[in-house]
Image (cartoon, rainbow over all chains, first blue to last red; front, top):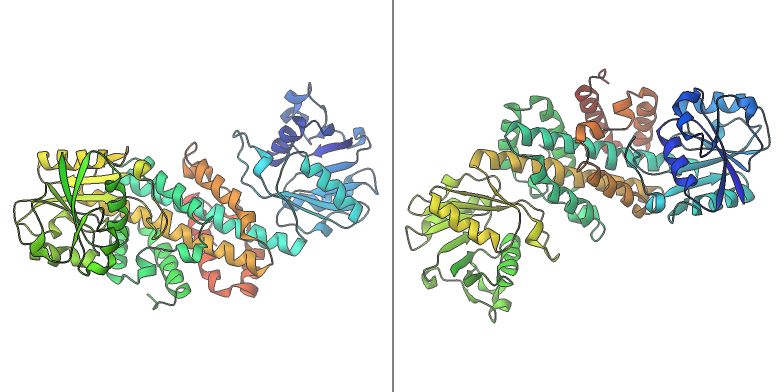
Length: 257
Length: 257
């Protein structure tokens, strides 16, 4: 059975800990956090430590820490020639110190603190320098998910960029929708069926074909009216409305605003 | 039992026809289309006509036509003092000719041609000038949906604006995500669990609190890298990336780009 240690005590580390600790196929050896107090409450389930020198030999070390810390931290690890994988969408595999057998174990999902996540449906994007290490990461991934992709560093950076559009930017648009509802004494709930349908529709129809709305129709009159409404309620979002409208107009061969 | 006639032969009209024709509580009297050939195939299920003079007395006439046509069309109707409701999110109730008892029956949903819709979960936003007409519209709405809201013209315009953000604009961001995937030989499928999770998360967490990503973190390094990637793959989307990033930064009290 593969042995795994998790290094890092943040959001992704905690979600991975929870996923692996309920798996029967992986032996979770240790959990390292720079400051043990964040993970101490898990000490009945796993050996927790804040001393790198305490780390025991494991088949895989998953480094789930902030992007900038990955390189420097990997240098301080007191071992070499072990499989060390980071979990970042935007950091190159080579950011890890070359004394390790390097890998990437990137869960493409929005992991919120305090919201339990079912990993089964989360795409895991794997990369390794050596074939046998990739196989090890696959075994690890299969223990918690059914969606496993081999993705190189360049593709992964692109995935991460795409994720910023479809997750972070989309969520900001939800926030604007919510602001507009509350400003008009309407519950945000009223928008939720539409939000859900919009996200489901693209499973059946490519988003380009699924596009609807005033910009797609080139409906200048509605666009003008809506800009006027924004000016009088949320002027800070008029620029965004214009840029998005122009982008849809261009993508669909319409005229510029 | 309420009698209903649908006027218009487009997308919304067709979806409403399908919803009402499977309801036991409403008697669908007639379906009018300017050009009968679009609706002729339904003639076994309903009396279809292209002559306004053929229209029989009904308790409610739903006018499901394009925004600009609502006013002029309502003038040409050869009757008065009947309840006539339009289905538009952005048109005032008063756009209907004042010879009618006016109302609005606005389904807040993205209705795609060729994709069957379950109305049960679709918010119907109702408005009428008279209390008894509002009650009639409620009876009509209850025959096809469980989510019924009384929404005045100003609120409805705001809803429609909010819908443009959470549906039309969001779908455009999905398209960009899809473009980025294909450009990098990745299936768009890989993003779908993230898209679905993002849309579900806001049922439990207000979108403001659910916000994550480089802009929320103020992670200038990642933002710069991603802008560089866009410049080299989809330069047409760099402006949009910048505007969305700035908007998140401002909303969350961060520095400007």
